[in-house]
Image (cartoon, rainbow, N blue to C red):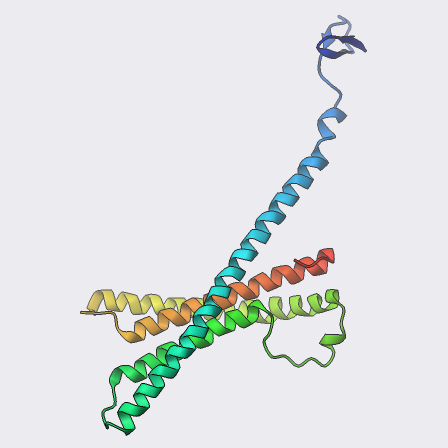
Length: 213
């Protein structure tokens, strides 16, 4: 090996004795583990960012649900007074009650899943370690919930699209309340599904790496 001011020089194994600056093969390979680690940390950071966005959206959905509960109480109170005191029931009261209560339920689902506070039968689950809990959750979510509820979300989306198509073809005037109701239900179901998917990713990471996100 010969050195000069441009770095080490390597002699080629050829009869002419020409000098080559090509480094050995292992010099190309030694930086690959570092690049792989950098890509892993970048992907991990992106995944955490996506999970935080889903959590933030469902936090706001929970805040909306809390205000919708107050609006629902006012609507029910007004409808009761109008029906039984003034003998003048309204048509918008029942539609408003159905729409607000439906949105309250589905948004509440997503918010409860955000904090993993849905009711469950904890006979053995509470005694498990975090990794065993993650294993149970991964199996239950991956085998039962995601396929079945995913199909349910797809069917709900098709129903909303058909309703919008019918309204765009035959509808006149304002958007019907039934269409708004279906849209709110579909949005809430999508938020619930995304929050369950975020929980599945966290459980899978706990199961594989032994770390919580």
